[in-house]
Length: 261
Image (cartoon, rainbow, N blue to C red; front, side):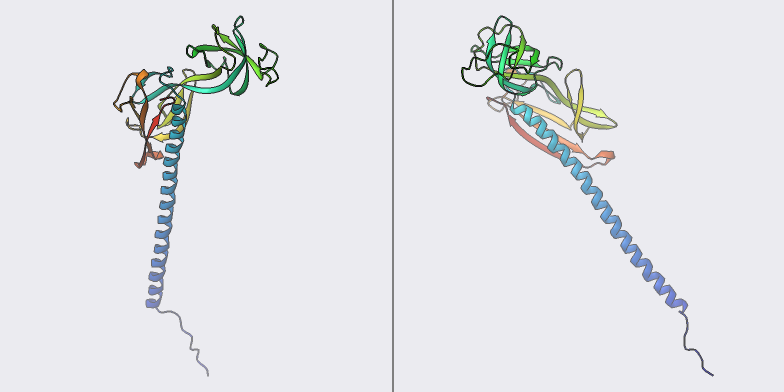
């Protein structure tokens, strides 16, 4: 008569297997939690860095095109920036002083009275600030282009105000006055661009304790100034904050020198 030599696991062996399995599962869980935390932190850091990069690019682009001597600034405030921002450019090839209209070439951007755009028109005695009138893309809608055998007019633009003395070849700059500041939306603070009628949220979120966006305005000697006419450069500081109330921040500081300064 044969006896089977097979036997089951003892209780001690089962306990050892359970303990070892629990240790392995616990270790794997800790690795997964660490990886998830690392991934979340990287996502949050990317949001903060993107906010700083986008805001700095927008502000620097407008500042480097601005000129204090041409009146692009009205007031200098530590937590907001108000300036004339360029939105279009053209070169006058025909000037009709009676109808206050210009034909232009090399046009780019927009010239919109409906959007509230204004114009800077070159004059030998200094830039003329004028309101934009109606614009046409028809080449024969305005005064003839004075360039004989040269480029033809790309369109025409009416101007609200005198353009006496404006020469052929004068550059025309269309601009829109914007104010950049931090505004709150859905519990977070964002860099906003406000023209008095519309508000666009551009980047964020930023710290909402007063440190998120600050400016220091300086004259030629480097001293702080509150006079828009003596402004030569400015220091700006941006502090981005992670969304969702996470108290982690990044800071970017930059110095921008104005056009023609």
